[in-house]
Structure formats: structure tokens, C-alpha cells
Length: 244
Length: 298
Image 1 (cartoon, rainbow over the protein chains, first blue to last red):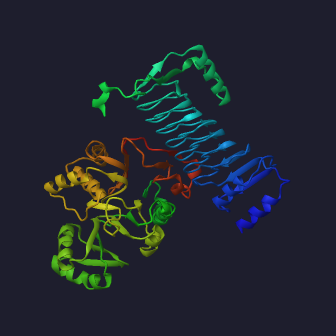
Image 2: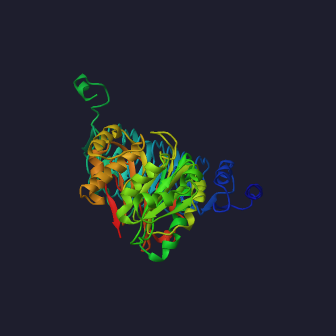
Image 3: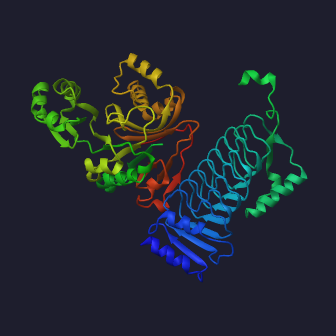
């Protein structure tokens, strides 16, 4: 029975690597085992097999372990991640890395809508494309997308960095606060209060650091344009009353 | 929520498995909608018969002797195959509209699920697995099909409120989302002569497409029209006699994943629905773009 397997495995601290086959064991057992980890645990390398689009794979992990997910996942993979390094060897459904605190998540395939939403820290790398609302309401997370991003990305983004090697869809950075957006390709349209900004030396340095951290090679920081807030929506302006 | 699926076969050798493949896809999305479920299957055309899928809450009473009475009323041979609360009435294609009217006259409690040369539609209150078992969907063969599991928002949890909705011959539609201008569009379509069975928003979308196609548009053009004429949230999957189409509204907050191989084109609200399909690991898997029409025809 799955529950017994988990118990047995949990006692066996001598093994540093743990393999969880989701075609044989319930998802709750995986997440509970991950949540049971304590600081200094020897179980630092985890592998998840046959996720088959399951929701909430490896959410709420708060230890510095590695998790390799072999296949595509559903909603909220790695949500609230705080320190682990998760790699999805497939594509991710909506909300991958939602509200990440620290650590990293790498998606080898594509990501569905609102990747990295509300993330406060850590690094989210999408090696394929991300769809709509990527980085919506981001609050400090760094997101690097090798491909394109969909419409309404970085909507109300507050802080952190969104780097896109490809193109961005409609209404990029609508109602943005202080997040920085770097796009190498074309931007379909900018959202309200989002403008193109000068790329100064400190931005080139910051962006190069992000590209290096995300393992991007053969692409120069100078190839990107920077976008950010025009800061005209911060305070209510009586002249805008008609817009409400 | 709601969960929707669609499967369009390119490889004829898979046709005997259409029912079982579509059933598994729908069951995998059960937790997206526990209220009711339905499936439309497009079988092989017989060439000499058309079909009407009918439903009754009292099948023992309503279906008994209906074939003979109907044959007499329309002056053509009629056969009936009963499956639980549903039955498929077969008759000469030229008599199909007459048969439809005669059924309503002979048995006022019978509801028409859909009609056409090839489509059969089964839908009931309950979980997908129960609905699939009840109608033995797994044993059905066909070229393409669509399915839906419902979490009701816009109208009551009833058999008639379940999807797919069919408003034209061999046409049907499943929907994830909710429409906000359906009352107005319904009024306009009623003025055009369309008939409605429910207060449901999705039935309006189905009737809108039927009306567009009746005006000579093809499936792709009709789907294009939904983007300007329907307001609200929608991912639609639509079946016609020889085609299968998908469209999402411009905001596209209702999820959608598609997969294509040499053998099939498949749609699921989530990737979970596609994981048991043959060759899925090597399929082209993508998320349909917002406000973009996709359609395939045999």
C-alpha cells in the first residue's frame, strides 16, 4: 500500500535520492513527504515519475532540495516554492511557480497561463513559450522565458524582472508598478502606463546576470529593450475621472 | 469550471476506439464538473438513414410502440434503438423533419437531443463515468466526437441543461465559460426563427453557429463570428458532420490544450485529458491562441 511505502521510505534516511512514481502512489503522499523534510535532511534529490498532468505537484516545498519531474504537470506546480530547485522535464499547466518565495523552477517545455503569478522571489525559467498573464502581479520573482509570452503579461507587476527572449503579446505590463521587463523580440502592444525605457549600464549588467543565472548563452543583453512604468497611474488624477 | 474534450480521428484504424478514447478523456476531467456530462459521437454515415437522438424521463412509457406509431404518422420505415433514457430513431433522410415534429406530437414529454445523418448525443445528470456507463459510450465507433462535464453556473442542473447542445443537423457544441449577452442574442435568433429548449447560455452559442452556417458560412467563418458577436468567457469545441473546431475568447482565461499526431487531433481543458492517447509523448502539444479559430474537416 502506498502509505506504508512512504512510511518505510521516510525512515530510511540513508538514501539521499527518492523516486516517487505518481502512477503508483497518490500525489498527496508525495507532497506530504516533501513537507515532512526538515533542515539538514539527507534526502536532497527527488525524482517524480509519470505526473501525467497532475495538479499541485511539489507545492509548498521549503527545503533546499532538487526535484526532477519527468513529464508534464497540471496546475500550480511548485507553487509557493521556498528554496528548492524544481525541473519539469515537460510542459506545465496554469500557475507554475505561483507565489514562489525563493529557489528555482525550470520548465523544459511550455508553460500555460499566469506562470510565476504573484511570485515574491526565486528564479522561474521557461525554456519554451509562456502563454497569457505570465508574471501577473509579480512581487520580486525573476522570470526568464526563452520563447514568447502571451497577452496581459506582467499585469500589475510590482517588482522583480521579466526577461523574454522572444516576443510579447498584447497589453504588456498593463498598470505596472516597479517591475522591470526586458523583451528581445517584438511587443504586440504595451498596456496602460507601460512604456519603453532607456537601457542604462546598470540594466545591462542586471540583465546579463539574469541571463547567466538562467543558463542562456549566445544572447547579449544589448539585444533587449527595457519596459517599465510611466508612473502616471500611481495616484488618482482628477483629469482621469472619465476613464473610470 | 467545466471540462471539455474533443477528438477528431485522422487514422481510420482508430475509429472502433473512438467511444472508449473519448470516454477516458472525459472521465479524467470529472473533478472539473460533477453536475452532468454528455457526449456527441459522429458515426459512419449509412447513406440511406438519418438519426434523431431523443430523451425521456420515462423511457419505458414513452419509447414503447413509438416506432410503429411514428412509421404510420410519417409513412416511412422507422427503427428505434433504446439506450437507457435515450433512444436513437432512424428513418429516411427526407422524412427527418417530419419525424421530428411527429415525435413531439405523439409524445409531448420526449426531448430531442439532436438530429442528423451521423450524430448521436447522450447527456444526463451525473458524473462522466456514470453517464458513459449508462449509454455504453465506450463501445461506440465513429470519426470524431466531443464531450463535456458540467459545473453549472448559468442555468439549472438538468438533462436539458447538460452539454453538448445541438441546434442544427449534425451540429453540436460544448462550452467552458459563461456568456453575458446570451439573452439578447437569443432574442435576435428567435426573431430569425431559431427554436430554444432552455434558458442556457451555451444553447445560444450553438444556435448562433447554426444560424451562421445556415446563412452559408463554413465552420471556420461561423466560429470567427463568435469573437465579435458573443460576449463573455468561452472556450468552444464544435462538431459538424465532417468537421471539428475550437475557438477561445480574446481573454482566454478558460484553459485549453490541444495535441496533434498523424492519427488524431485532440482537445482537452487540461493536459490530463490527453495523457492516455496513443503516441501522446511524441504529439505536437500546444495551447490554442486566444481569439484564433482552429478547425479540421474530413
